[in-house]
Image (cartoon, rainbow, N blue to C red; front, side, top):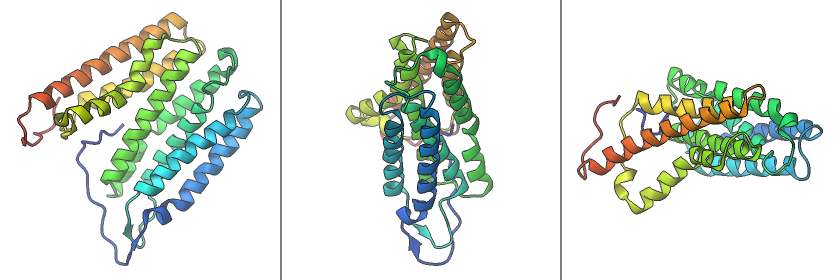
Length: 261
């Protein structure tokens, strides 16, 4: 998981007129819609009841619209990018999982589907950042896209953990923490300032996904999984508290220093 504050390399320049973002992303977005639709229809025979497949496609459509609107224009010759395609695939998996919310499918039937999709999404995480750096195509959009997909995936997994009875309502704190921070930054401008790259922040972020995935694994005892999710939430709250304290204590106008612990 790549934090938005991580150092970024600019994309290499290419000759030609800038191509609008929606044109660059149209084909990958449509391919993602096809993958999501096929997965939704296939799983619908075994899992979903009611409007689950439709919900998954609508969630993916929301992600796709935001991507097409926010994707920046680039010179001719630069496509959507392999790194962004991997992130979009993770977004499609998150949308597929979101379709399970409210489906009233017993955990015994959905457990392995949940676990498999979650593990796949987590396995793909980090690959997009490595691809972007190796191809020197990292930019602010890709970093932000990666971060927002991470946040949305954690929110969906948190809701599913509660809905399936694998954890109590408190686990929603994992999925809501990022959005509460955004809300707080609207009131406290100091929270909008960039933070230096942090190994601690990356590690805690990865542990959130691992904790929720472990919690949703069918063979794992419910109490053991709930304890793992609790530990993940405590670590996340601790990490956010450190960042908030640093941002609020930093004098106005002071630039972020070298990478933190």
